[in-house]
Every structure is written in structure tokens, then in C-alpha cells.
Image (cartoon, rainbow, N blue to C red; front, side, top):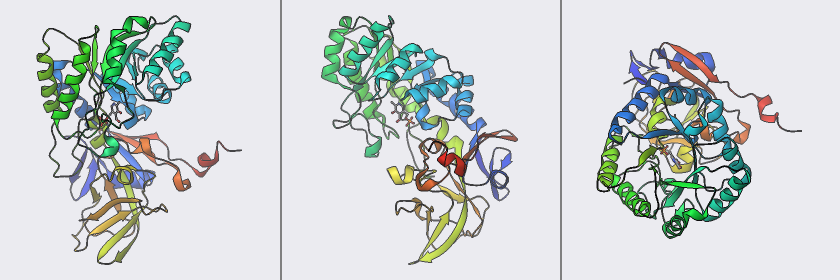
Length: 411
Ligand SMILES: Cc1ncc(COP(=O)(O)O)c(C=O)c1O
């Protein structure tokens, strides 16, 4: 497969040596492989081919315009959760009709933006939002396509911050409320309520919960003519070398079986993958600043931190970390940490990591999703640059922020 590979004693992104990129652009640096992104897209299309789904890339996972343009060229639509994300997708040339706008707290001005720009679907997450949208649509004499995002009350077996379908989750409309809405759908004169949406979380470990959620949603589809079934994203990716997780094809097969049991009805299917497409097409490069030994373990302080990659601090997430250039194994385990003044600023704990010294480069893998899109300026750290590798060439797709950028919006 294309992407990040160890060849001749060092790591490459396709035909470009990562050490060369680190020297040219500095670190921390996000690097993406266009070829791997394209491969991931085609693999997902193949896995789901029997369902012929509309693919809406989840912009929250990676919002860089160059990445969105590659996906648009592949034929992808976009799942957005704010008007800002919709703005980015439109700016990247997306057709407004290919956008799906979800989000539990869309403001009135965001809904107006969605209506004025004729976004494809608005996924509504509460009865109050539905009423507001109906009024706004009436004022503008438009009739948008609306999907109800259902909270199926199915708790996914994933990190609790990534579960979105359980009893205590803030997302979606409860099944009972959705039932009443669908039975009175004609009352919402300015809304074409024709879709159902469900997304129970990310990094889903088994298909059983997806099937259960879908069954609950399909019971609702019997109450009102539904054209579109958006089954969300969340297909898992192996972050650890030994992770064994169901492939997208296994999800596709399970969904297909549930739908076959509903043979009398046919729906257009939509999916909203984020990490499946971009996680392993991206990696973060860092440089070792200092090393010390404390109580039998190495502390490796590098120049990347929770401000470039929040997932370890936010979700206890694992990202595999290797030296960019092969070196000798070390007898001591390593904690790889950043310079931010927070104890939680760790990128990897208790790792087997080969010997590294000050100046060596580290590769933090599978960080293309929810890496740069969650980056912050905490500790007044300028956000990193991003580079896209296209075969033998690389392109700077976002320059590194400067100290001037940090204060640009202040008095
Ligand atoms: C509504 C919705 N759709 C899709 C996704 C994408 O999830 P993933 O990147 O795990 O595929 C998310 C992620 O949070 C989401 O909230």
C-alpha cells in the first residue's frame, strides 16, 4: 500500500524521505500521502459497493482545503458540523448539494447559512431545532431536505468520549420524539423530512451495535416516507500494530443484511467516514529536544505536544511512535512527552522505542485524522505546517504559524 514505509533504514512517505521533509519545513510537521488517501477512498468504495452509498467525508477529522479538494476530485461529498466547516468545503469547490450538516447546537445564523447556500441535507438533532428550521425556511420560501438524527440509545463499546448514541449522550432526537415528529411530519410545511441519520460513535469495535442502532432507526422509517438513510461514520482504524478490528466490508455486510430484511423498502444510503480515509494517510514529525532517565525509564522530550496532537490527552489514544531513522534497540522503556506545561502532555507512555538522542526525528503515526483539526495555540504555540506528498513531490498545504499570527486578532 502507499503511504508511510520503512525502506533502507529510514521512513518515507511514498517516494519522499521524511528526514528531508523535516529538514526543509522544520518540525512539528504534519505530512500526508495523497496516494494513501486515494487508496483508502477506493477501498471504502469497494467495501460498500453493494450499497452504492453517497460518501460524505467527515470534515471535522481533517479540514485542510487541499485534502478536501483531493476528496472532492474523488467524488466525495462532505459531512460538516458547523457553518465554518461548510464554508471550508464550499471554498474547496464542493457542490452545496453534496454537504450534510449535522450538529447538536446549530445557531440560527448557521441554519440561515445552510438554507441560503442550499446545503444538501440538514440533520436535525432536536424538536426545537426542527421548529426553528421550519420557521426560517418559511421566511425564505425554501423547503430543505431534512434528516432526523436519531439517538438509538445504544452505547457503543468505545472510549466514552467517542460514544454518541447512548442514554446520556447529548446527540440526536430520542426515538419517542422522532416517532411523534414523523407521524406529524406534514405539519412542518417548509421541511422535506425525508431522511434518518444515526451515528453511534467512533472507533466502533463491533458491528452488533451498528446493526441494533439501524434496526431501531428502520422501525421509524415505517412511519413516514423516508428516502435517505445516513448510517454515519466511525469505522475503526488500527492505531496499534496488533489491533484487530472489523474491516469496513464487515460493517457493509452487516448493514446490507439488515436492509435485505426490509426488502419492501429501498433507501439511498449515505456514510460519513473520517478516520477510515485520512488517519493512516497522515503522520506527525517531531524532533527530540532532550532526553533524561527517571526511575528506570527514559523521558524523551520532543517538540510536538498536545497542542499538535490532542488525542492521547483527550482519549488516552495510542499512536505508534518510531524514530525516522532506524537505530539500536534500547533496554529502557520510554515516555514520549511534549514541552507544554501540563502533566497530561504525553504522546506515548511506557513504549518500546529504539535509542534516540537530541536532534533525532520521531514519526508519530496515523495522525491524519483529528490531529491538525484539533490543534490549538495553547501555551502560545504556533500551529504546525502541513505538507502533502504527491508521489515524488511535496507541496506545502498550510504554512507554519508565526508569533505574529498568534497576536494578529488582538488590539
Ligand atoms: C456525526 C458524525 N459523523 C461522522 C463522524 C466521523 O467519525 P469517524 O472519523 O470515526 O469516521 C463523526 C465523528 O465524530 C460524527 O460525529
